[in-house]
Amino acid sequence: MDSPPPSIRLMVDADAAVPAPAGLVLEPFRAARFSAAGPDLAPLTSPPYDVIDEAEQAALEAADEHNVVRLILPRDRSADEPGSRYERAAQTLREWLAAGVLVRDDRPALYVYEEQQDGHVQRGLVGAVALADPDAGIILPHENTMAGPVSDRLALTRATRANLEPIFLLYEGGGEASRVVAAVVETPPLLETTTDDGVRHRVWAVDDPATLQTIAADLLPRRAVIADGHHRYATYRQYQAERHAAGDGPGPWDFGLTFLVDATVSGPQVHAIHRAVRGLSLQDAVSRADGPFTVRRLTGPGAAAGALDPGWLLDELAKAGQEGHAFVISDGTEAYLLTDPSPELLARTLPADRSEAFRRLDVTVAHLALIVHLWGLEDRVGVVDYFHDAPAALAAARERSGVALLLNPTPVADVTAVAGAGERMPRKSTLFTPKPRTGLLLRPLD
Image (tube, rainbow, N blue to C red; front, side):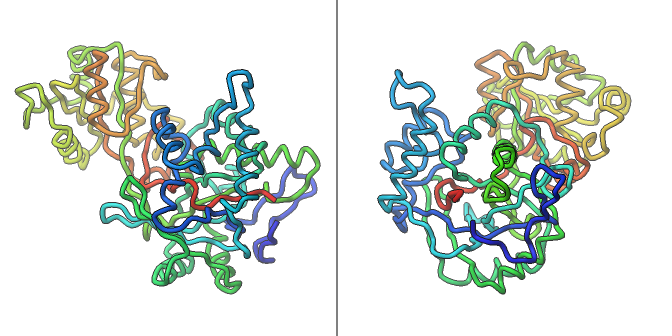
């Protein structure tokens, strides 16, 4: 493993199972990158594994024989060889490295990574972050994880011995690390490509020892929140524990591939994740909410004809949300605005032992006060479905004779406050975009 600068080495406690970092440590690494450049690079990349459906996986595979989806979502060789897909990914990775499809950079570096989409610019640093227990208050999760995805990613990591996709961390900075990033993007990039979703990606390598020390000193006292990649971070830590339990000692498994973004300077766009609930008519939803909430029917573009404009609904929701909790509910043909939940409702349904940051979240009120208490529904998969855009939620409500529940985005500051309190938000609370593109920078663990 490439040795980190002395000032950021891990602290090894003889009584601890794994080493612990002194703070937020982002280590340089020798990236593996596709040897293709420019426009030819885009067909080799993919979105993160957990947002790719079957149709998109097939499209990515067809885009290029070396698309990275073959590593992150490998297929079994045949129906007669179940469970072989992880080893297939490992074999593919070895073959691509041996054939020069992927090449390793000569020197360890941190990488400045910039994404531009529709006028929005997101910039940060890609490196290997030192893994820390959430109780240490250095890297803070804001959502819970499920065993299935962690088991899947862990099997892939064991086979490939590589970090194939970065997690996405946010921190509040404005310091020397961000100034370095701002200066670097004024120079020619190491690579540049535009993917078919319209995002332009640019990457620079930073390997000057003095600059790396400046970045390290700035980051060390800070803490970061996981914006995306909770299951990957849990995988990092489980793999680390396994390697130490096997007697392997300190190594590259004490770090994980990470995209670290200063949310105060050039952070992500934040979007809501909407809900659609089954087993409830709009009439019942309205009648049960009326009283505990102020309920107003929305009449506007297309409403009279039963053709609601999702953009208009979200605009009305955003305006109402400036004054407090607000939700739009709809069956896809008519819609109502819910505002001003009563203090009695909130006192009765929000747990008193949770932080004020958790209690003031729209998603908390939506799930505990509205879905569970007033609507009497179980808050589980199959009853509550999640959608990244309002038209999809409204369409689901129409198709399933259910109710779409539209929410405002959760501010980054609220996500940070909940994580800082050591708590978790309800599942699918926030969508940060653009996500880092998979395949630009890989991290073999050797």
